[in-house]
Length: 234
Image (cartoon, rainbow, N blue to C red; front, side, top):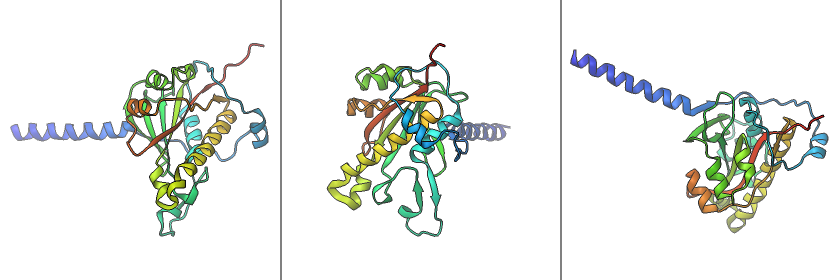
């Protein structure tokens, strides 16, 4: 009986681990490749928006934005080089892809509060921290209010050493250029979904890295709060 009890306890322990891992790994819906807004219209209407409604975002909207920022558009399974085995939505010097994306979730339907990291290869999010991180992010970014009001905040980071392996001292410049391409994709996709965002570059690097537990090799490049646009009263 004691052995049976130990076995049952062990199995329960294993199942609890599995459920925890499952809850921390979020498979995202398949992104749409055919929007309702033309690129020209989205370009003409894009603005920096700092005020958002209290409405929640959907997981489909999050999926679409992350895919637009760093999603994989083509895989070549026959290519022996990992570096050249995929293409993404944003251009990358040498196809080295040094950009990492984190999303601090506050109001997303069906998704618990926390900080998630985007996995482009599996088009999924992996939870790395629990809880609402907006106040901490805002404090690191000189208390900018848009961060606290947003449904989510996307944090863009770069791993310079990935690009430096090929381009040496020019790596920092190339990674920042790539970050700009990612930023624009997020801007345009957000507007196409009826959402607002703004690029925030004013923050204390060390404070932001510490509060989000960003790995030492990654450098924060920007914060993009995102939320539903407040409709004007007719």
